[in-house]
Amino acid sequence: MEAAATRELAPAPPAHIAIIMDGNGRWARNRGLPRVAGHERGAESARAVVRACRELGVAYLTIYAFSSENWNRPQTEVNDLMGLLRIYLKREINELDSQGVRLRFIGARERLPPDIIAEIEAAERRTRANQGLVLAVALNYGSRDEIVHAARAIAADVAAGTLRPDQVTEDEFAKHLHTVGMPNPDLVIRTSGEQRLSNFLLWQSAYAELVFTDVLWPDFTKDTLQQAIAEYHRRDRRFGARRG
Ligand code: FPP
Image 1 (cartoon, rainbow, N blue to C red):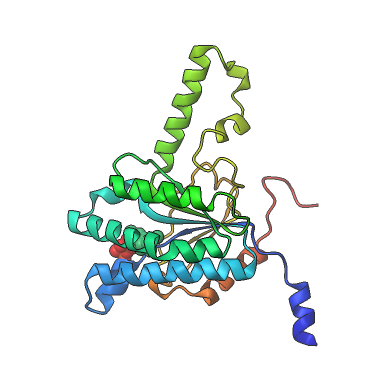
Image 2: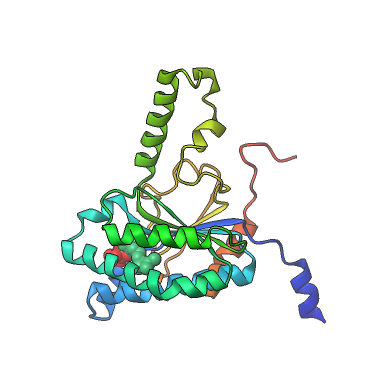
């Protein structure tokens, strides 16, 4: 009885959660394992968090799988990460699709291996009409690069005379970002104790609540997610306005 009442009173979860999944390397090192073992466990955490978001009724989840700066890692690690992505795309797509998950990939397509580009485009096509959780995977993503490309596209429209400078509004600008059509994140979580955004959703996170946890990404569970959501609910979101 009491449990049912508590459930009824539970506040709605944030509509859009974005996660910087950090600490795979340290998790592996702490166990004397190769870094790739940390990434493998990290991919399992990503899988669990997708499920948790569906269960909690989160509408949008964005995960930072590979940043544009990650190319600077040793080639073997880049290959390991791309390899894992290949495996997961192939292995998970049926289940994600049957669960109504709509997949989208944000980030620059260039530089990604051609078979991965084909795979992500197929996954986007296949799940386009799904009505469940929107799962955005940031892949070769960098926020400054995204913003520069948006500015360039707008400059081209203005130069072509199809857009007047006074029509360049925040809404117009956002239409040129990879996240077009998605709401801004309400909650950005970063694991492993680091407290920075690392070029992730800089425009979109202007008013997001930031929650940092010391938990390393491979140890992240539905419980950790719920703790971050509870922290989010304790915050007082004013969007720059005054209270009362
Ligand atoms: C950070 O750990 C994590 C990444 C570089 C990428 C995240 C990748 C995964 C969770 C696995 C693959 C993802 C998918 C979607 C299949 P780190 O290596 O920076 O850790 P460290 O800071 O402890 O070295």
